Length: 127
Picture 1 (spheres, one colour):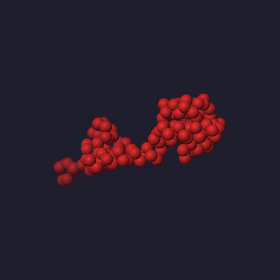
Picture 2 (spheres, helix red, strand yellow):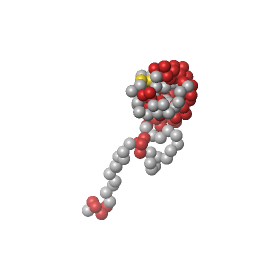
Picture 3 (spheres, one colour):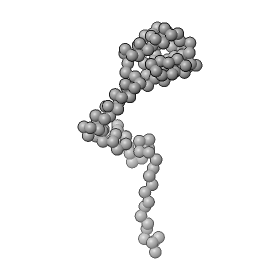
Picture 4 (tube, rainbow, N blue to C red):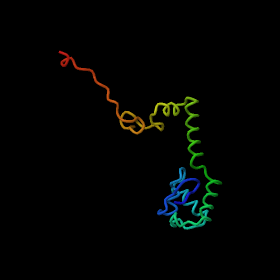
């Protein structure tokens, strides 16, 4: 497995797909990187030469925020929203959807599994 910027990318996949294993690189950026490094995106990642790998690494370090730095930046943005106590920050703090989605139904990804609350017993059952 070739290592690019400290990440092992799969050998058997085309390079433009393998680049997506790096956090912060999607389909468009992967194609742009292949174009800048001047090699065929369909080349298997395992077949890339050391020269091509070093080109990719220099392009990534120079032009893009990726991996740990991007994760840290994202966490700092969320922490800032929490600190200034804006609406989005409160939603992050409570673990609820942030971007206006409904929560009466759905929202299970953010809220977690259902917590069943026992209902009141009816008058008939108490006798």
